[in-house]
Each structure stands twice: as structure tokens, then as C-alpha cells.
Image (cartoon, helix red, strand yellow):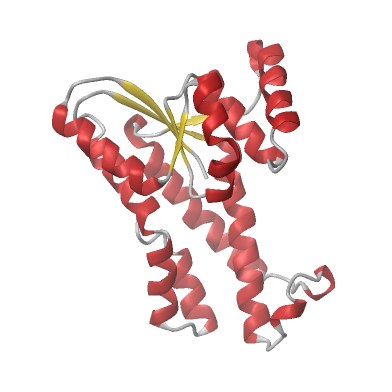
Length: 214
């Protein structure tokens, strides 16, 4: 999972250095290692379920769009102080976006192959009332939580996930303790998730559910 091809595309198209690529990969190395641990060992005990929300998957396209914008702004010499001004957002090359979409879809195929990770709908379905109740509690009881994070957490709670894996330290600080007490779900970083998964497999002693999001 270390190279979907998107980062290489950015580097080649916009003349970015190998150092840029390595710095970027290092930032997300723990998340990549966690996914790499799941995929080739799906049938190695103990049994674990791994889920990812469609919302989290599709947020990836927004994140890549924003990265591409900043790369173009940087290459165009626009001062960083003006990067957040929507009036300065550059047009994105259509052919580039088509290639990115194809590469990301190929990566999704790897993630979901043989049920390694199960994609989840964010629709409330028959649990609509419970969804709204949990979502509303998250929004009203936690001052810093964003709508998309509340949706992801509500989905995790409704499937009774044991862990919610995220790199968002702000989110973890905001809701970790209350979610542990109220819904018995742990918010952990990818590094902690990787260590726990390896420990579980070494002991081979119990079954748990995992939700990997964000």
C-alpha cells in the first residue's frame, strides 16, 4: 500500500523531489503499516473484522484535491498566506484527476479483496432512530466535533466496534474518554492499532471488531 501511484504522479508531473515523497510517506507510515498488516494476513487468527466507512473513503478525494491545489499554488509561487483564499484556487487538470480516480479505485480494490476490509454505508437504515440519537449526543456534548466525524463515530458505535482507528489527535482528545465510558469503544492511533493487532495474533486468544477510519 506504500505506492498507489498518486504520490509518484504528483512528483513526476510537478517536479517534486524524492525528499518530498519520503517526508510525505513518513508522515503516514503508521497508517500504511497498519493496513499492510491486515491485507496479507486476513485469514490468520484470531478472527477480526475490519471496517471502513464510505464517507471516510470518499473524503480521500477531497484530501487529494487539496494537496494538489497546494502543490500547484507552491509551484506558481503564490505566498502561503493566500493559499486558503478560495479566489486563488487553481483549476485542476482534468486528465490528472481522471488518472488519480483510476489509481485510487485500484487501491480500493486491493483493500476490499477477499473481505480484508469491509466498506460500510453511512445510511442509518433500520437503526435510523438510534443513529440520530447517538449523532445528536455527539454533536451537542462535544464542542469541537465536526459533522463528518460524528457520522463516522456513530457508524462505528452502531456496529459495536471495539476500536476506532484515527490519526486525528484532536478528535481523540475530545471524545476518547466519554466514548469509552458510554459506548465501550476505544479511539486509538494507527501505531497503537498495529501493536495491538500483532499482540492479538501472537496470543491468538480472542475475537474483536475493528473499525478503521480516517
